[in-house]
Image (cartoon, rainbow, N blue to C red; front, top):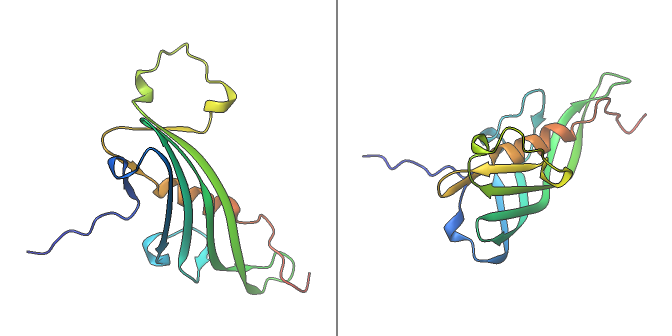
Length: 141
């Protein structure tokens, strides 16, 4: 019987200590396909998670290299990326919040999780996608 590989994007909340937790991991580019971006290196994630009860504040940086096309000359070139990110995860179900409850500005980036795991895949994927320049320029431009 083959053992199922644990999803590397799932973070077991009970494994985190109260206060600051420093995490680092490397993701193979084929394990996180990004539309319209040819990632040519491993994706390196450095993250600090501050745990306070069921609330997790995340911040960190993601480093990778990708092949992009210059918007001016049309040639492909390799570009190194280093993008900072942050987020907030709160245990609970956002669908059970009262409909008339207005979110303040601090809560707009709040994510909710149920159970014992937080899935960080969308945080990492969104950070990478949003970092892609609209009109990348090679060194000649």
